[in-house]
Structure formats: structure tokens, C-alpha cells
Length: 265
Length: 265
Image 1 (spheres, helix red, strand yellow):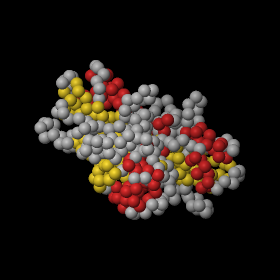
Image 2 (cartoon, chains in turn brown, blue):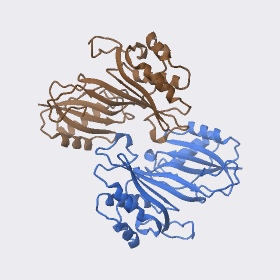
Image 3 (cartoon, one colour):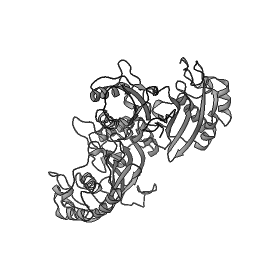
Image 4 (tube, chains in turn purple, green):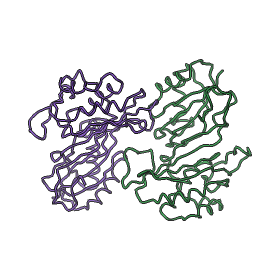
């Protein structure tokens, strides 16, 4: 039995999220269909993260246990032939049996994309939030940095959601560590990038919705620190829509023993 | 009666080309629906160019005659509200009654996009040709420059198509003037850009298909000059698929009298 770790990217517009669900097409189900076509049997796959309907991933990992002896590069090519063109397998490597696509994650990075041109871009339909009014990306960047650190982010979590255990304490907690948070402008695109050890439900989208308030001057530097401390969901901004959100990087515990190197390489 | 010139952009993936046709959704029909919603009546619109099913436009112009006195900026906003998100009106200005979206064109620019990463990009599905094998963009550029000049491009025209009159002679001819043709690489994307006074049916897509042969070394510098001179469709490459093709610029005869400036501004 081998454990294979696959790296993939997908455009989420046509899917009801990553996770398999009844009566709605998911990324995981689509991948399992391709796995069945290639490996001759339907194998279970374990993803690194859930993503909501319409959310994208530029880097996503899942693992799968298989008795197949197919070379990893052949598996990549064969899966891509059997996948729709909005999902692509980027790489595959064999990992130790105790390596886990979700539990071995050290940090994840999300990027929220805001198209800030005067008119919406027809080429980014479903792939960025369209915001045609002026935004001060420099001010948004100053404010975004206030997310950095170990904070109780219960004010940046959709109400009714169940808190997930953190890496450190294993218990239910709304405390998360944000390693970095920044906003930059690239032409008409504004990108908010945040790295952390874990994220509460809708946390990045609420962060993005709150940063939009700073971008139009409704919140000032220092306000985010107060809102985080208050733990009050009502003081943060609205949940920004899913189409702007991308899972952009997943970093794993290194494992030096593997001849193919560690998955962060 | 006013003649309004609209600038728009569209992603062609969902449409059976620009031109209105039976039993298939076109860009023009979709725009006319929005015009009817905004202006209260269905006005005819005249486009600058036909584009095939799946072909995109980053800049496209159409004109419309109307008795409506709606300000041009209000017309832009109202049309965008009534259009699907893969079509966007970029601007609108009033033009003289003898200005014509198609006949007043001096030159058009097309760009053909080839994604040349090792794996297809799920974010560019339907918006670029996916070519995962090595291509020498420098060599493609040297060869592309051979398209420049006044040539009879009958070898770069889909068979069975009827030649259109050129600007200069007004008669049927397969002679066209290419002002510039070049290939550049931007990361994993290769872009072929060509400007000319007019293009035969499928001409840019056949040029792109032929340049792919130069990119893999099947044709060498000098060969394109010979193929153009031969006028032999069979010696040029296959017609590259529509998803890589973008109309990227349309340049008009200047008209200094207009207070809003000329549409090339």
C-alpha cells in the first residue's frame, strides 16, 4: 500500500465547494470520478481543507492510499486527461503512511482578489470580487497588518459555525495565529494575502469584507485591533463573496526521509 | 437622432460568436436585449467585426442610432447592469453620423494567447490555448515578423470562405497589409500580437497554428515567407482553436471635430 500526495488547482465557479455532498457537484466527487477511471476502483481521498461553493484553489493537496504501482508522473497525466479543464493535477509524490493531507499542515495561505477597475472585467467573471469604486490599497495594507499575531478571532467567524480545534491545544477554540497579512495593488487588481495556522469558518472572507471598509475610509488604522479585541461579529464587515477567495499555498511539516523531497519544495 | 459609439469587452466562451444567428446565443443579441431594457426599444447595433464562437474581445466597438437623450455615462452604467458578467461596456461617446463602427476602422489588433506551462491552467479554461510542451518563443517571434508587409494571404484563409473587400481597392482580394506581428513570453503565457488593415476568415488562427510549428522547430526562419508566397493553405499550420483568440484593439479614422475627442484617445 502506498500513500500518494497530489497537488492540484481548481476554479471553483462550477462546484458546490470541495467536499462531497448530496445533490450538488463537488470538486472531491469530480476528482474521485477521475481516480476511478484511472485506478480502476473508487478510492477515498482526503483533502487538506474544505472550500466553500465558488471558492478557488491555486494550490490544494489531497492524499490517497492505493495498491496501484502506477508511477507518480503517469498518474498526474492520466488524471488530467480524465478531469474537466477547470481542475488540474499539478504534481504527485509518495509520502510516509503517517503523513496526512490535513493534519500535517503547518500553515495555509489564502489570497482574496478584488478587481478595482472602473468597469468589471468580463475575463474575471466568477474569479474576483468586482469593486468599481476607489479603494486605497496602501491604507488597506496598513490595516491588514493588524490581523498579524495570536488572536481570538471569534468576531471574524460566521455565527452558528462550530469552532474547530487548533493545532496547538487540540481543543475547541477560536484562537488562531496569523503569521502575515498584507494588501498589495497590481494594476487594477488588489490582493489581500494572509497566512495562518488555521482559519475559522468564513474568517478570510470576513477579513476581506472588513478591509473593504478601511479601503473606503469607513474604518481607520487601529480600528481593526479594537474590533478583533471586541470579539463582536457585528463590528466587522460583511462576509465578502466567495468568488474572490483562493487557497494559494499549503505548507507541511518537513519529512527529510523521502527521496522525492518534502512537499514544500 | 444621435449616433453613439460603444466600447465593450467580452469573454466569448458562452457565445456562438458576435453576430446574431438563429438557434444560438450571440454577443450581439445579448447586447440588444440590454439595449431594449435600457432604451425601451430594440435598436439595431452595428459591430466593428465578426468574431467566431468562443473568440474574445478586450476591445470591441459598435454604433447605434437613437433618439434617446440619455447621457453617455449613464448609458454605460445602465447597460452594464443589464448585461451578464462576461460582457462589459467600457465607454460610450457620440460620433458624427458618417462615422461607422466597421467602415471607419483603420487597423485592428488581435492577440493569440498560448498557455505554455507544464500543466493546463484551470483559471484560463476557455481563455487560452493550452500547450504543455516546450515552445521557443524567441524563434516564434523571429518567424512572426515575416508576416509583416503587404502580402496575398490566400494561404492563410479557411477554404470555402469568400474574400472580403480591402479598405484600399474596395474589390474582392486576399491581399492584406500587416503593420506588425510579434511574439513575446510573459512567464508561462506566450502572446502573438498582429496588427493589420483587415484579416481574412480564420487568418489569425491559421497564423497562430503555423507559428506553433515554428515554436517546436518544424518550420524555420524563412519558411513563413515561402509559405505566404506559395499561397498554399496546405503548407500553413492548422487553424488554432478559438479560445486563444482576442480582438485587442481597434483603431479608427481620427475625427477632430468631436468635443469628446477621437475614439483612439
